[in-house]
Image 1 (spheres, rainbow, N blue to C red):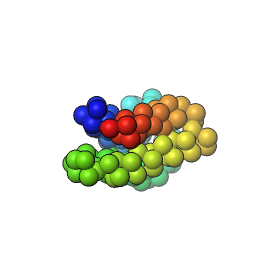
Image 2 (cartoon, rainbow, N blue to C red; image 1 turned 90 degrees about the vertical axis):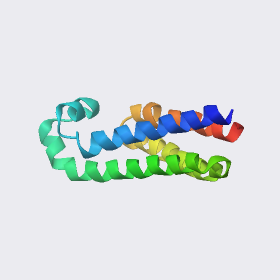
Image 3 (tube, rainbow, N blue to C red; image 1 turned 45 degrees about the vertical axis):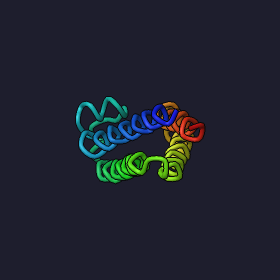
Image 4 (cartoon, rainbow, N blue to C red; image 1 turned 120 degrees about the horizontal axis):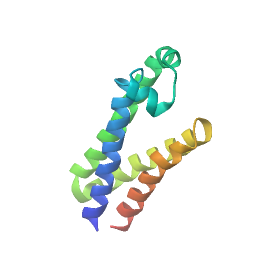
Length: 118
């Protein structure tokens, strides 16, 4: 079961690396505009904020990778970072777009359940 849990955690980490790329590098490009439904003007105006948000997503991914690298001793680290992602996803779903719950919080919750069950 721990292998399945680590695969799920790794997938959540990859998802957050994808968010990093979208927010830091593609925010005002066609892929970023499509992903977030922004106009080019809105994206230009919020580019610095999005890059900062992307960096935070990178830290979340790094924390998950760190937890995986620690092996069985990494359970508390994975639990902490997955819980942070769940809270951020729920908050984003309530304040920005409900879709964030499905894209961010649900995968992290599934991975957390698997981590705690292993």
